Image 1 (cartoon, rainbow, N blue to C red):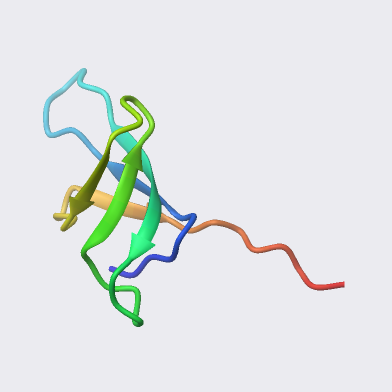
Image 2 (cartoon, rainbow, N blue to C red):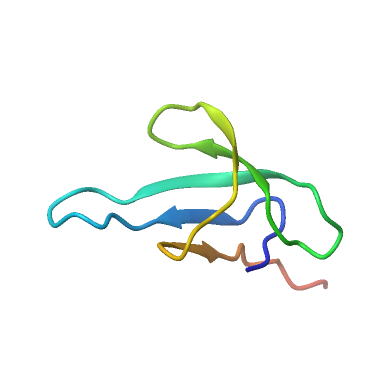
Length: 67
């Protein structure tokens, strides 16, 4: 798993009917984009250091094309 600042981290729930948790990656601690990530969670605005598990995915931010 690799992420960059601005990407979204989505953690899928293992329980039926439970909501996914989503946040924005605000810091990546390794140059290659590997975990851990500092994530600001959208539901609480709290920041936490995350080592994503198999129930998580990174949704990469689309970068604007240079003109």
